[in-house]
Length: 157
Image (cartoon, rainbow, N blue to C red; front, top):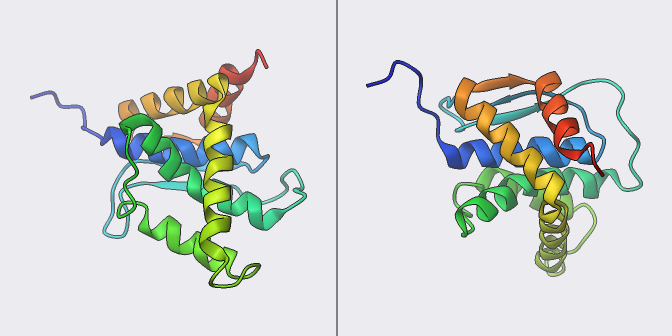
């Protein structure tokens, strides 16, 4: 048995999705982890301070939150709603600030389609793969490392 820790690939893609979409939308990342604790399997922590202003900050936050689910689904071929329950509850709370209970599911579907389009870009998806690979190797990477991998993958855009 190797003495290197084994990390969950699905969690790595999930957290890499959050990080990549955050970076693509101008939100700095502080740290990304696939080390589980009693509350979650992994975590993408955002940096404090200045970040690129957004035309729609609420939408940006929803897209980042849905990116884990979307990246995981692109990697596995299926949506694991139960695993993304925390993210989905957060998105619903945000969406209800803008939409009625009745209109919320349709808006959430549109946001999910939008984040799927972001991740559907070849260079952006390559960034997810690079970050996921580093997470599988190390368990935790810095925001600086995530940004470097993102820039490396998207440099030809």
